[in-house]
Image 1 (tube, rainbow, N blue to C red):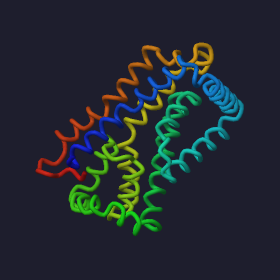
Image 2: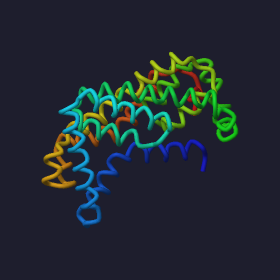
Image 3: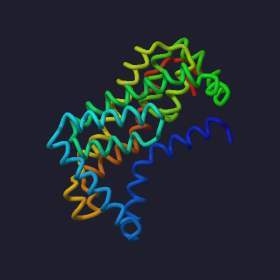
Image 4: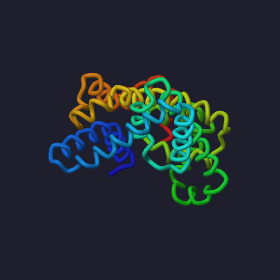
Length: 243
């Protein structure tokens, strides 16, 4: 199987992951496999929401610190955390929190890669770096933006790879902030559309509101739509995609 075929398969799996996770959760609920775990998770979220209502600044700062740490350590749970923050904090607070914290964590991960793990990254992904460097030299910000907007490559891997190529920290910051914003809006909006009270009463089936289903569908198709837009708006040269 060629690299291109493998990449498109990975892209398909990644874009459908949010919908698949909901379907698996529904199946688990109906089979009675996860009822206790679901109740425990909801209870924890309700306590967290109560803490936010009583001490909003403390709750936001703790949540932001946790998000920065998770992103900086390249733990692949940021999207789930974005949905959770939307549930707990509401749309606007969660949007600002996740947008800033995700970019800060990504920048720390990139700097960590640049100063501490660059030799290991070069050994592990040397072939990808060789393909990436000429494109970044000519269209660096655009390609970073395209990888943020349509995540063909996982964000944590982008952070590691960009850490070993010549790109300014400030450029990395603002391009990442802008490129990740549409996806952040969708994940946070999905969480904000969910009611902890309704979920505690109805269980996992309470997820299936019209708004939430629409947002899940948008999460599934958005990477493909972004990919089409990137191809149309990007540099008009052959073989200009960095991956």
